[in-house]
Image (cartoon, rainbow, N blue to C red; front, side):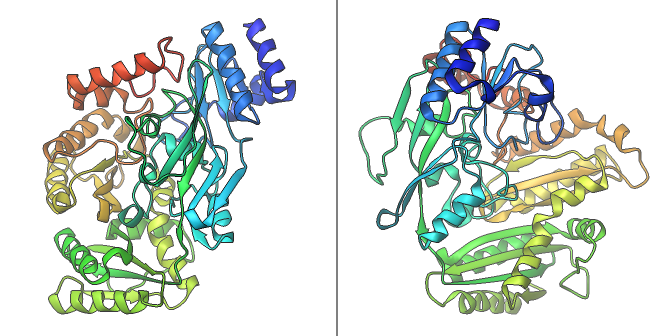
Length: 466
């Protein structure tokens, strides 16, 4: 291993190889503090060529590689094991926007670019890069693509997968695949880039991407709507889609239990309504012209007349819109401050959301009486964060002992509704065994065949996904 370390230092410079525990510690633990590893070293290359040199050295030494970007993975996908033999390749120094082609609505950016910085770069060209999620101030493009990130704009713009035109990838052999094509149409065989998007670094190291841009919205309208139940939330979604069409950018739901958590743990936050309601929806409408307010108002009026909506608050300023969004975006942090909880990131067909919530909630109530459901998410694309907090007064650590049994109830219910046990967070280490339970043997065999073909030595992020 000493020879490999020396070769890594020659490839990227001594300062970019972190081999002492005090130096690599921040890169060896995942964001949720579930996993902690011990790498041989953390290497921080500054170019695609340096990444390739590092991977070649690791391949020749048969040393495993763990690709890492902003290290905000929620499933342990970017954390090394404890063997002391794996090399973490952190791409944060690959942080250049190489090109913005406004006429083609495309931007070429490196994998270490922070997502919020890409928003700013696009805005500087009077364009929008629509991938948006809570960690955008620290997550990086390479990780977003490797996990096929979702976020709040999926309803209108799609997952990360739909936003990519081309990729540059360092393969497990150290070869560089230059697929940085800014084409909307390329019907020349297999769409190779899609193999690497969502693969969580198990097939190669994404070093750059060409992503889609969109015209910058000229008007935006935001509202929070009070609803009697999830069934009426689904009806409200239909009304909003009918009235707003593609201008409907986001449709989020959260329960009153979620709102109570945010109010309790974020001082200064206020509820938008005088009364409490079972469910809430947050809607955002954006338009390249001046039509966002009118479209939203038409949707709200129809929903109120039909009884789908009980009340609504429309933001009158950008600051008020941010405050309404904070009610939704602070739920995860509020639940973390409340104490340990059991989390799920699942998806089912949009039309099945109300039935899934009711059926799964009833089953959990029977199995774990008094447990508190904290359910929120992206109703517009069928993605729910279906979380469970312990009953009031119960020791949280004791409650966490129910994790496997709770997972079985929730994930079996997801399977019955023909859903997915991971909607936007990925598999990583956290859900690897669950994946084996819910994928068919044929699906797993196909995935393993792809892995063997691209990574025959098995050095690329082993122990993740498969």
